[in-house]
Image 1: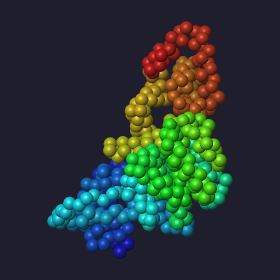
Image 2: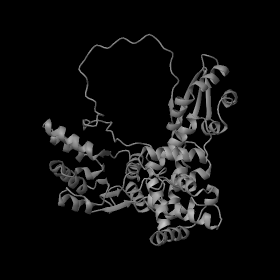
Image 3: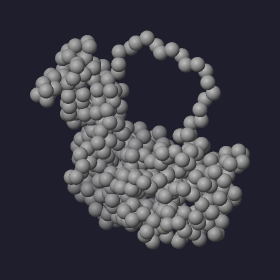
Image 4: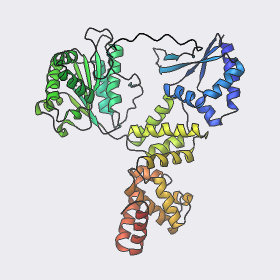
Amino acid sequence: MQREVSTVWNNCLKIIRQDVSEQSYKTWFEPIVPLKLESSTLTIQVPSQFFYEWLEENYVHLLRKAIDAEIGRHGLLEYSIIVDKGGEKKPPIGITVPAPKPAGPPPPKPAKTAPEPDIRSPFVLPDLDSNELTSYLNPVYTFDNYVEGDCNRLARSAGIAVAQKTGTTAFNPLMVYGGVGLGKTHLVQAVGNYIKTHNPNKFVLYVSTEKFTNQYIIAVRNNNVQNFSNFYLRVDVLILDDVQFLSGKEKTQETFFHIFNHLHQSGKQIIMTSDRPPRELVGLEDRLLSRFKWGLTADLQTPDLETRIAIILKKLQSDGIDIPYEVVEYLAHSIDTNVRELEGVIVSLMAHASLTRRDIDMDLARATLRHLVNDTERVVTIDTILDTVTTHFKVELAELKGKSRKKETVFPRQVAMFLAKEFTDLSLKSIGYHFGGRDHSTVIHAIQTISDLMETDKKIQADVSGLQRQLGGK
């Protein structure tokens, strides 16, 4: 049977290969594994939910063409999506998206009845006696796909300690803080998912502060505050995201204060996230802030270059995608703000490649990045600066990035480095990378040289000022 399904799928691939580029074929079809062929239904395994959605959105007609040719018009395609890659001691876990059933007569319309309350609504609390209390955790967020680096090592280590010894460590509460898109939600949900997997009897609850507040408001309106409190007092692990949004909400803070006290005294684990450290949280009661400091406060910082590269590679691996390493390095050097933006660029790059049927290369990466940056109003990129400087000084980009020490090349190179420092958020090391891999000391020297010349040479000052205005500066 396995030989038969492999033969059918290989024949399908021959048909598919005729209509897609080589890079698209390697990216979207080589990672697929044929699993079984039963009753004209072919089941294929794909490495991720994203992968499945992309095939359905972009290649469903091509897959239909191949299935028709190999199995017939009655042939069906079923997906097995890997949601957990497993490890040495456990096999991968997948979910199956069944093939669509043939259309039949429409079912009779049910009689109209009063709608039942949706216990999964974000503003309705589940029955305390329910056996299916929802944790609201995203199973995608795990420690396995959370890349460790100097920027997050303390927070990740504390998270693992809390996950393994819930409620018994000194890290209670655990407060994780950091800027937007640095992985706070991923980390705290990874803790929750680990606890839920290894201690299924514990009730783990993830809730945003906004949802918590809205639930409280509805409870007050319905004279149901006691039930609201009773529900949260039953939680074994409470994960409260974006606690800074409690600011100014005095009654909600008071209720949370009592819930916090009870959980902490009962040995239950409390985990919180914030966009700033407790000492900078304004609009919160002092007694609440003092409790936030009882445990461990760990920060997440902007990832360094090596961590950004590792994040990109991890993201590509999880989606079953392979792109040239030079593109990975270029993206890591060009996006150094936060993880969310980095992952967004990767998704957009793959989308552009698939929709335009182009191979993923440096040209496509530059075009994609320039498009995204314009969309987010960060108008000036390193590529914009290089284009502007090479046009103004009439030098080739290869010369600017090359080893030439000629004055007519060195000066424009130094100007470009100066502008890169002024107009982008790139580190000195990343700026040097875009100029042929030069080190940060060369960049520092270039910036200082242009700064000094602008103070003593009016022509150079006018030249550089003109470029600054051209790039959108004052």
